[in-house]
Image 1 (cartoon, rainbow, N blue to C red):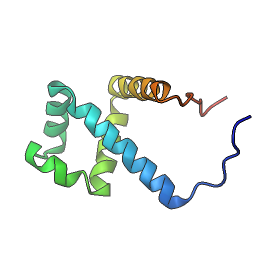
Image 2: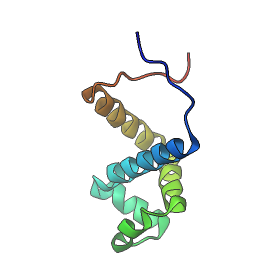
Image 3: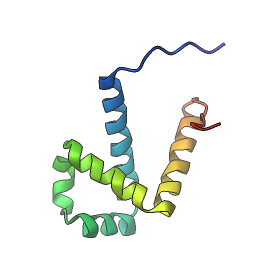
Length: 96
């Protein structure tokens, strides 16, 4: 039997959301064409990404960018599912 999970604290949710956004940014930066499009759309320079990645509003923009392009979102979801599988965490659907 699986362990029963308690309520998730807001700090934990924030940390998890920021980690997901960083993973999304890493995914976007992993391919020059994706990164170039992201930089062009956001107007941020490549030299500023590392500092910007510490800002919640920038991370929100990363997730908005990802969510705004369905093929990109689906590719990222596949990567995260594979990652969780390798890590030994079963993928759980959020919907029935």
